[in-house]
Length: 197
Ligand code: ATP
Ligand code: MG
Image 1 (cartoon, rainbow, N blue to C red):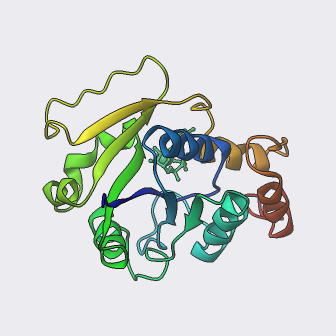
Image 2 (cartoon, rainbow, N blue to C red):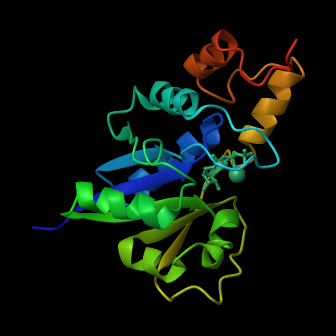
């Protein structure tokens, strides 16, 4: 029997948007994944250059966005672990939950290029196969990556970013169709990303 194949999509998801969802869907189909698990990061300790929304809000938006897809699910492993999120910890926890599975870590190609700066970077390639999602025509500058450890998949809808969604919300511009309808409504209900009044 072949192993189960599970995709892992880590991210801040502040908020989750259709770029994430299209990428996960594309990789699910191309790699014949049984499931894609979205894993929102935990709350950062240190104040970074911007305030990240509460983990619980980011988690709930990810649940809302993925609820209708039977192949998508959301994991709390990073939200429930204290401290900053390291991908090696995410993958170790998921491997413990699914010991019989092959893991496929889905990430933007930009993030892939930073991979070697990750804590215990070489370990992550033992835990998962990496799939870099890119906009069409992108070439990975990956001479330092272990051969065969990384695949690239071109996806449409790459121009959407959480940064742009937050900026549009703060500016009073619509975010309909950039994020799922339920996420638009959640952002409005919880008054996320608005300039405080
Ligand atoms: P921010 O603008 O705050 O950095 P983001 O849009 O990059 O947010 P993240 O939560 O940081 O979203 O991204 C989670 C993962 O999804 C990362 O691997 C990132 O590279 C990838 N990603 C981000 N935007 C897209 C997109 N439009 N299409 C495909 N993958 C994306
Ligand atoms: Mg990003």
